[in-house]
Amino acid sequence: MTNSIKYVGVNDHSIDLFEGQYKVPRGMSYNSYAIVDEKIAVTDTVDARFTHEWLDNIRTRLNGQKPDYLIVHHMEPDHSASILAFAEAYPACTIVSSAKAFAMMQHFFGTQFEDRRTVVKEGDILSLGAHTLHFIAAPMVHWPEVLMSYEESEGLLFSADGFGKFGALDTPDPVWDDEARRYYIGIVGKYGQQVQAVLKKAASLDIKAILPLHGPVLSENLSHYIELYKTWSSYAWESDGVVIAYTSVYGNTKKAALQLAEQLESSGCPAVVTHDLARCDLSQAVSDAFRYSKLVLATTTYNADLYPFMRTFLTALCERGYKNRTVGLIENGSWAPQAAKLMRAMLEEAKGITILEPSVRISSALDDESAGQLEALGKELSREYTALSGSAAEKNDLSALFRIGYGLYVVTSNDGKRDNGLIVNTVSQVTNTPNRIAVCINKQNYSHSVIRQSGVMNVNCLSTEAPFSVFEQFGFRSGRDVDKFDGATPPHSDNGLAILPKYINAFMSLKVESYVDLDTHGMFICTVTEARVISDKPTMTYTYYQENVKPKPESAAKKGFVCKVCGYVYEGDELPEDFVCPLCKHGAADFEPLKQ
Ligand code: FEO
Image (cartoon, rainbow, N blue to C red):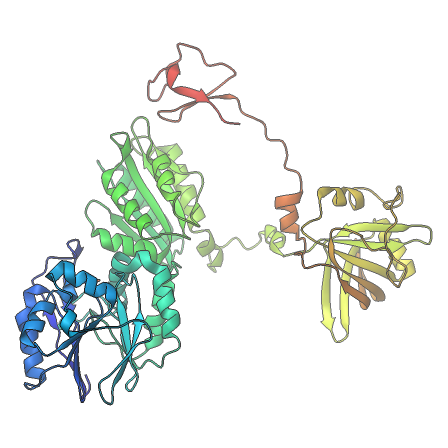
């Protein structure tokens, strides 16, 4: 600490569970600082079990000088439990905090210190001499009354629980990140939006050091910690890899989980972490689920519900705002398996979750069918890792070409008798001084020979409003045989060619500058003679057309009945009255028609 900032906090090695639930094998620190200036301020107090040690620290480090202010940033008892003792030890001292914090003091201590308090809010300042504190409201980071404060002369951010971590200061961790992540996800994780709001305020401050209520003062490489907080609070994943969280009653689900882990490791997955939810530290499993990009949940059905440890784990994820991840499901059930359906239902409240299909269904123990499903899940999870590996990747997968982003255009031309148009997806700008556009057209298309002779064309950029009828009008048939503008009176550009009156966001008139013979196709390289923007609607892409415009083939509707208990499907028009489910042995009354 500096000459004017003194550490007066304490280390706790006797605590078994922080907040009554988090294991803290390296203990915990309750940080408190004294700012020594013309006026002396102490920031926050400590857990009730350390009141006297803390008061001794204040006396010793202040060499008997008496503090003028106690600044209370946060009222959770690990920081507030010693307020009353402090107030009694220093009766002339003023207590500075938010209105909400004083209301909480009423509940904790039966007083709001009305005769010796200063209520502060966002934007208020407290001058101590050379040091000036600016108060910043930080509601829900991690209680509603929380304040942070910024000391301007030394650039110090007193960040309350923000940037805190598990672990006492006298038993430092090799890295800050892991126990800070477990602390953040477990304790503050639900309040990402509020953390983002505070980070935005902090961005305008010249911060030289962060002084949290738990863990070390951060004074170097601050961008590392701030970037981690940005990642965590935005619920983005921090590390690429797969967490496999499983429960197993007799070892069969565990066997599947570990087999999947082995497959992923040998497929080049950058990190594979397994957690047996009945035996691991749950907060570590939750922290890892938030850390990594993908999660596999493997569990059994138990009492017609989820196995309890899995339900607890999923509840912990969802109540902390788990989202934007890829999830694979493995269920095991000796009869009437329900687990995958129940896990899916719990994940419905989480946003941006991609569940890999299909889930793996194990009937008691892995067999050929479920082992095949498990292998398929492993391949899907490791697909991108395999594809990026120099040795394991399939290097001649020409379906890659379908991933090139194309727009869709109607190219109009005129053969001297009538307007013509065709659909193309091969339009690209190839230079910009001058602007040159390349258009490739199949030689079999009538437009190819028309443009070859006329040397001009219009490129009409279709917008996402274009219906399938536009594609029927200009595609699927030849201008040699039909008049594609039959009955229509389209507007024309200065080169005399047709402009589509609807469903375009721009058009360009092109003059052919050169031609490249590409065997089946010809490439026209053109200059732009006219260009107009019609609307701000997005351009129709090939992908958008495939997904939203092209009619979907009629799916062969499967008729049948599904067992409401176990999901078994009976195919047929009618379910026999005396039918008994071969899986769960429930009768016809427990079946319902398949939804079409
Ligand atoms: Fe460290 Fe929210 O208390």
